[in-house]
Image (cartoon, rainbow, N blue to C red; front, top):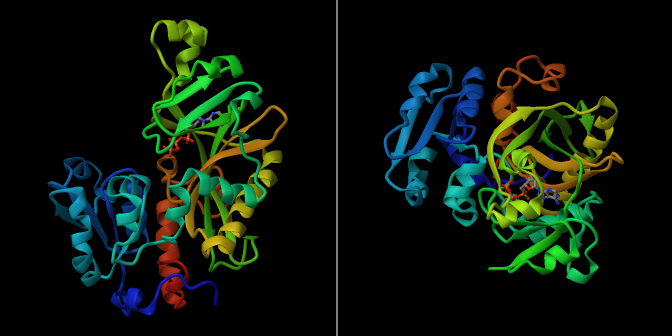
Length: 355
Ligand code: ATP
């Protein structure tokens, strides 16, 4: 038996029942419902206002039932009903973002994964400590602007939706920055971005083994980001600034990518270290997560962020990816989540994957 994340009381509504998979109708919900259905689990779509009509367009991914509330803040009030239905909430980025990490963490319903991770992800400094103490290469943080060498990216605390970044190509350009709130100054890493979709299962004892459990790579994407991605077409940054155009990193879509095969050991090593350290720090980051970083020309992978749950980039791979096809053809992250739940229940190990 590994680390217990959920109390008996939390798991009581699931005893002897087929669990239902519930999530907020947004982000990667189609994939989560589709995967649950493929594993024979019932599904509940949580929505704000009437059920979104676009679900009717996707019959294989439409939840079996909807549970509507009039405001996001009312979502916690569905807890009693969800417990009655033996529901397990699967978090995704929008769910946590809309509800807020504190409200999400206190939901009185079994949640897939370890909700303790929220406190580590939502605080940039804590996330950095986690990565740094795991021995993962990360972009340099400048406490003193006089130490700046080369280009930097300035990030405000709680920057949302890819806006509110400031790029400076050197120390002199940074001196012109006029902050409007608390921020950090990071080395701007030059290279190619890779967003790697991993899945950590503490209850699997084969495959790529960690101290406990195992690690799977299910896919990889790169985000399309407006307006930075195409900004070069307009010429140099200074000229753009004169014209009042500032770079933004608003995610507008995702494209599939693969890594040079010789770099895969590095990818697994980085993800493995992040997991091993998470087990020491807070009992482990269970289920899907995304390692987001930049491969430099020296083939060093510097991680600027981890998303600690399913990311929208996995929506590219609902019928498998060039990686998950080597595990099981057609395996999506959504299906992998449902599979983990089914297996844990069959082996009486739900306490290790739910919280
Ligand atoms: P989210 O939480 O929505 O993923 P965020 O606001 O936390 O975004 P980051 O993910 O840290 O922001 O960064 C947004 C984008 O900025 C990245 O996708 C990447 O394109 C770019 N970026 C971030 N940090 C760096 C860095 N150190 N060097 C180069 N580019 C960076």
